[in-house]
Image (cartoon, rainbow, N blue to C red):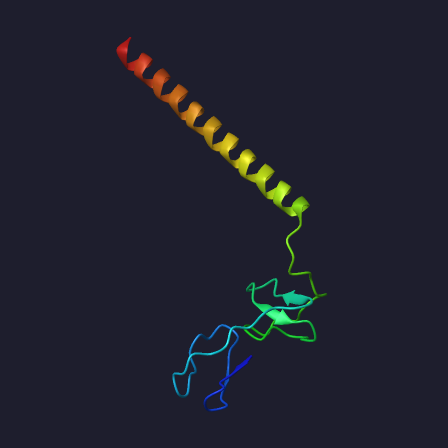
Length: 105
């Protein structure tokens, strides 16, 4: 939650400007652990029991830091996706060639 320094109104963490007076709100720096909602992806405070965005019951807090291991697995997944897409393209080209061959005969 962001509190407007101009009028004192409580605003959502995502707000950039105050919903009441339009003043620019301060940046919120995430420190410590957060609880990321598995339903909507919203980042909640560590103490929260339910998601502040959708109301889903939250699980254990997670670290906001992305590790090298996570980066490696994401890169591997991207490579596998690219390989799969390339194989699908080759399969489609092969099927197209066969169809052309059949019609030429």
